[in-house]
Image 1 (cartoon, helix red, strand yellow):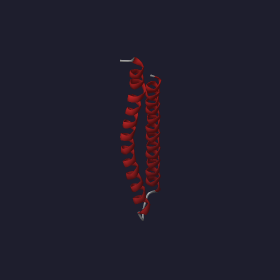
Image 2 (cartoon, helix red, strand yellow):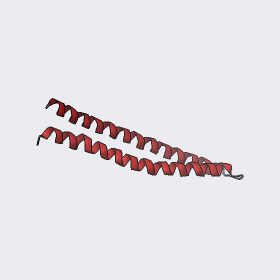
Image 3 (tube, one colour):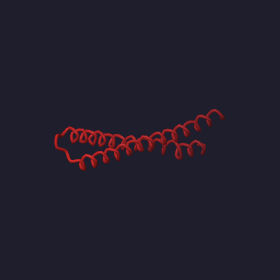
Image 4 (cartoon, helix red, strand yellow):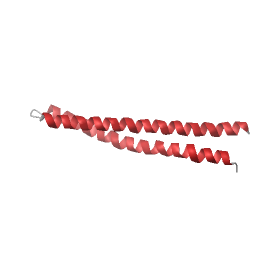
Length: 97
């Protein structure tokens, strides 16, 4: 067994794919939390007697969830790029042989 494909597989393809899977999981969790936070904001805003402090707190919690969703998607994209670089390296090794 040649060592170069194994190195590419275990240093780029597998870790990159794991980053994609983990990021997708946390993206789904954070996206559900964002939907709940946005629904709560809408409920508070439609209430006739709402507290301004409660509305601001809920709004800032929704912003925190929005940032988390963005970060999770960014990590997923980065993991996909790392995986693609590893697969590209494997293909280029096969073409050289």
